[in-house]
Structures are given as C-alpha cells and as structure tokens.
Length: 130
Image (cartoon, rainbow, N blue to C red; front, side, top):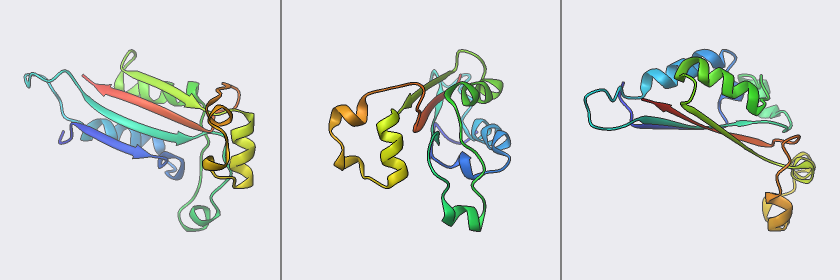
C-alpha cells in the first residue's frame, strides 16, 4: 500500500512462484479509497516466445514463458476482471530474429511492428488497483 505505479519488466519469468509475485505487486500498490485518485497501476511485461536465458537459468532459474490469455487470467485473479489489459507484440520474423540474436535496429519498422497473435515475443500488462 505504498506505490502509485509499479513497473516490472520481464521479471516474472524468473520467479518460480510468479502468482505470489502478482499478489505482492497488488499489495504494493496504494489503496485509493478516499484519496481522490481513481487507481494505482502496475505496468508489467513478460516474455512469450523467446529463448531461455542461460545466465539466469544457472543462477536463480528461468521458469516460464507466457501467453496473453494465461497471464491475463493470472492478473485478473488478483486485480479483478475489468482491471487488467493485455497487449502482446511479435510476429514470426521477430521471433526468428530474437532466437538468432538479431537486434531490433536491424529490422525494418514494418517487419518489427507487424503483429501476429500466434507469435507473441513480449506481453504487456496494465493492471489497475481501484
């Protein structure tokens, strides 16, 4: 109950009990009742179709790859339905580029930002505590 906004980028993939981490994120956000503020928000990203991080795997673990549907349900279980928005980015070319270590700058804008829901590279979550 201390933060107005919490930003968490590609971290839940490395936490074995990521559902407990989602609950922790919720608890860190301020309760806005009586404050005149509509909501506190968590801005979270998780990895979809990407390779295992060997560095992290050997040190503390690399446990999960997510889908937009699954992570939305996990966040809604804590934040409530209607308080979670999920958007994913990726396409078959961006997945191949990611797996080959090709930098985003090496792709054309259209190649990088064409969206295909079957190939999510990164999944973005906006979760609101109202």
